Length: 95
Image 1 (cartoon, one colour):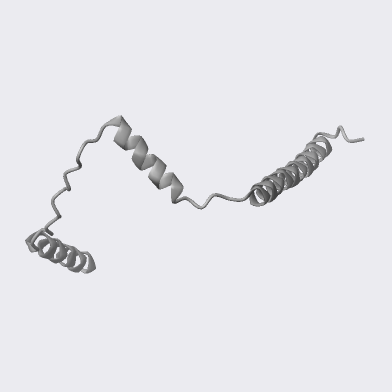
Image 2 (cartoon, rainbow, N blue to C red):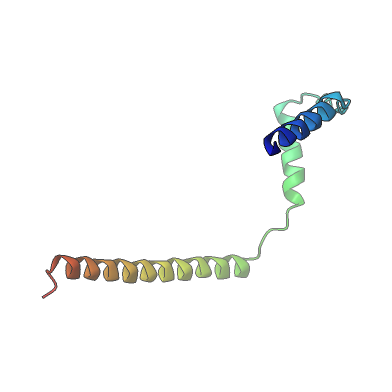
């Protein structure tokens, strides 16, 4: 009985969504094609709006990346070493 009630609720919900009018989507905007010269002018104008990092910000960020890579290397070395010792212990080759 419970399954029939669920089926009727689902059927009713499907009917409501099927009867609802479709949403009107806006018409696509026509894009004017430009030549390569105009394209590169627009690229230059957009890149002038970008806030570029200073040399100090670039240096600090690069240094932090190298530090994090080093920490990750050490972490995975330790994990690998622990797994290696565990495997040797399991097979009885540890001593």
